[in-house]
Length: 254
Image 1 (cartoon, rainbow, N blue to C red):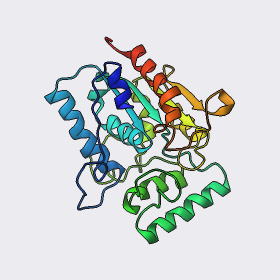
Image 2: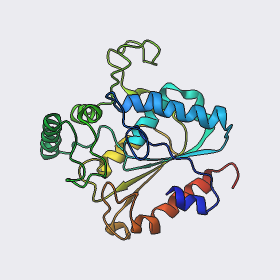
Image 3: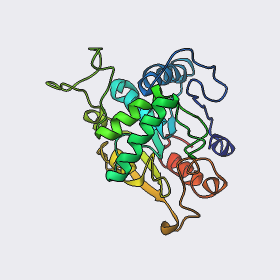
Image 4: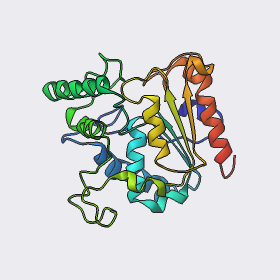
């Protein structure tokens, strides 16, 4: 996606999660909130304080959108500095659709705990076998159908609603007023089913947001899965151009 946008004249910066791509192998365990409040925080500090950017558009896939959401609820000074957000296959608490999907997620959680990692490549969930420590939050959120923080319990600096005994990020998601383009994949039946992506987007409660499911039924080239919705030849033909159009629509200048 970055290469495609670069050809259109956009300057692109890619944030890699620790342990992914060319980044170093982490020596300690980390979870979604580690990424949100350390990795994304460092990235935003670099982009805004060092490079002095003023027209940023964020493009995220899966957990990247979850982490960006958590970060922005606690660092709201950046909300007015981001022109738009694109979230591909992103949801945090809507994967359980019925007893069957609940059982599948519970079984994968137990398997991951025993193996120590998610066999993502084997199950075609993506190229990275995430650790159990990282994914345990995702299992917890989806099985419990909530978006509760494990940090807020120990840090009084995190924003909470008065009287709240277990801080849930959904309480502050409506404060993120940045226009969001949420893309779901019809063939993503496990990690980010379309209904879960729609539920996640709805909790921002912003009429400027747009949801779109890519599927054969909607006239698209395929029923994309969790990885192909962002990284495939067909995605480059029909999904990436819609992201570019979304950015152009919300750019301060082009």
